Image 1 (tube, rainbow, N blue to C red):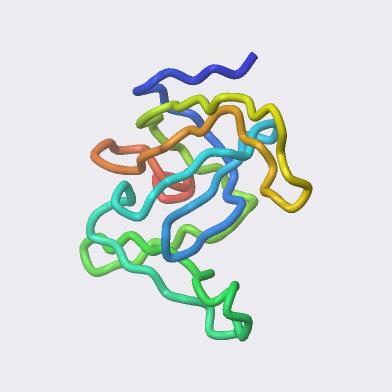
Image 2 (cartoon, rainbow, N blue to C red; image 1 turned 135 degrees about the horizontal axis):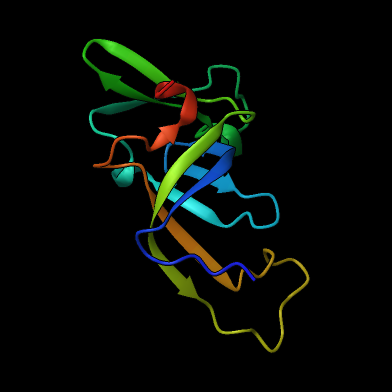
Length: 125
């Protein structure tokens, strides 16, 4: 059973990156989100220039700007350490339309702020 607690540090892989933040996965659970305001500060986001589709226009790469260097959060093969900020549970829907998004019974909001060692592991090696 996967039941993270607030303050726990967990390692995951990057699933997606857009202007709103990051989506992470621990393999068997993919509903971990790092919103933009919980990214390392200072930071910046660079949209992918090759995205032509309106739905893809927000995809891109987040960077942590530290002492004149720009550290990317981009490689899906690298582990990313995050701190659990909150865990919320959704009530199970009795009926769900076919066209609706997949039901996520639990949502984990994560943070990469305020603690050394958070973010992609290669930043700290």
